[in-house]
Length: 338
Image (tube, rainbow, N blue to C red; front, side, top):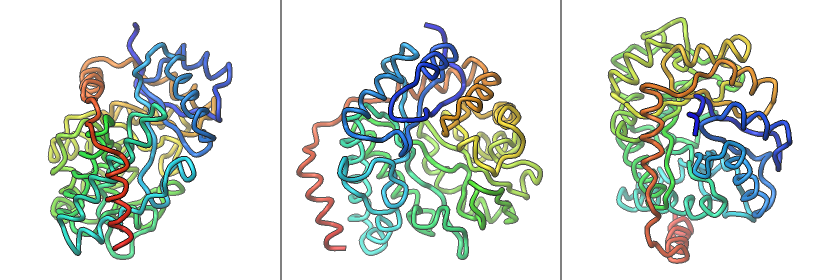
């Protein structure tokens, strides 16, 4: 089997078109990502996931989703229950740290019960960003709190719950998206905090969890490190901060290359991501012209990129023997009491 290319792709709708099948077969993305537009009913989701994998001839290809809870939850009732936000988990933790960590683990484990039924194997969670007062709501109540140690502890518990269920987490948004005062979906956030301030707060949760196998970058300019490029396209941020100071050696994917925080056409953006040293370009919108532009510049995985991709693939473990009904009852009781 030929090696995959260094990108992750979405698709347009509830089923694959003939053009999408042909494109994926020829370009061989490393994995896929689902969004709300891809979610219909249970059998349809399973069929779509299977079709994505069949298109590249890899029955174990990673399939990702953003299933955090709160307002970022791609699969919703009645297919799965509506989960609380990260901030709600953080509030329990502030009252009772042991109970908060249990709630985080349970939520991760319950996400795994839900998602594995559809064949989805990677959840873009935990959110390790540490918001500052007045920051934009693009993170907002998705965050676990304002204390880096608490964010790290809750993020670790959430990740362990996912892994206990046979899934893998993706930490986001490295090296920290908490100081944004604009929405990076629409414009480029610029962070003026000095490096000491960043090292004493924003970077700490990622340092605590640097042994995880996957992370997603932040479309943020950190002027104290690289005033000219957002982290996603900054070789200096990747080299000095993510691989250097944080010492993360896992698979590093971009946040969505389509977001307007990045400049230039799609090929220029994808080239910048690869040149900065990220391992994978993430393209989410399912727009074929954009997908082709990304695929044209994404290299075949090799060297360190291939090593990290294989390490992520090897990290999946068999789900534990937890009883879903028992865990769900425990989790829901926590929030009824909260």
